[in-house]
Each structure stands twice: as structure tokens, then as C-alpha cells.
Amino acid sequence: MRDVVYVVVVGFRGLEVPLAARLTERLVELGGIAVPREGSVAIDLSVSWSRPSQAALLGLVRDALGELSVSEHCKVESDGERLRVVVLNPEEVRLALSTAGPADPGLHVCPHCGYATPYGELMREHVKLHYVGL
Image (cartoon, rainbow, N blue to C red):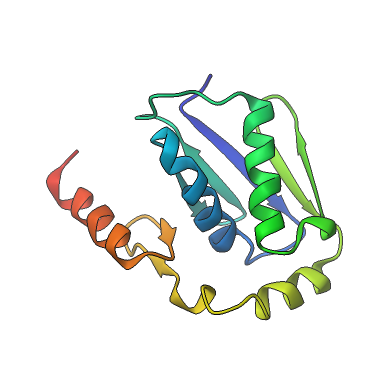
């Protein structure tokens, strides 16, 4: 399995950051991290002590979309190398994300790499990694 798996988001810009934040909450148990990119989310498993299968990653993405209340408006698929989230109804996704709730305004985004988390303490620890040279 590759160290970085990309989740390409098709049909809606703006889903990458909340999706990455929700994925990171699930990946932290495996030692992984999800980083938002323009049009995709990179799942970095380079220091992970467990390699989830493609099916397990698909399940994590579906769960994260469910937590964002947009799963019914998205289709999740795999082409073997990458995962794809195809937004079927962009207007409904926009509405769901805009009314998501109190956790979303508190999203912390790393100024160095785009990593996002709703937890300030986790962000402070993450930013330190950029300066230690790990």
C-alpha cells in the first residue's frame, strides 16, 4: 500500500477542509493524518503503524461525509489507486456545510501545510512538528 492516498473531490470546492478534519479524527488512531489540498484530501500514512485496506479507507470517508451530513448528496468510489468523492447535489452540500453547527467555526488550519482540526491543542502540537525537522 502507498504511504499517501488521495481522495479527489469532484463537483464542489470547499469540502476538502471539513472532510480532512473529520478524516484526521478517525486516522489519529492509526497514526495517520489527512491534509486538505486544492480539489483533494491527502491521507498520509507514512508514519502509520497500521495500514488500512482500500475498503476501510472508503468506509472512513463515508463515515466522515455522514458526520458532515452530506453523505446522501455524495457518491464515494475507488479506482484502485485513488478514492473519489463525487458531489451529486452541490447546492445541498453547500447548505449542509453552512448550517453544520458550532464545531465548524472553531476549525484550526495549519498555515504551513493545510492540516485542519477542531482541537486547538492538537494544532499547537502539530505546528511544532514543522519547526523540529521531523
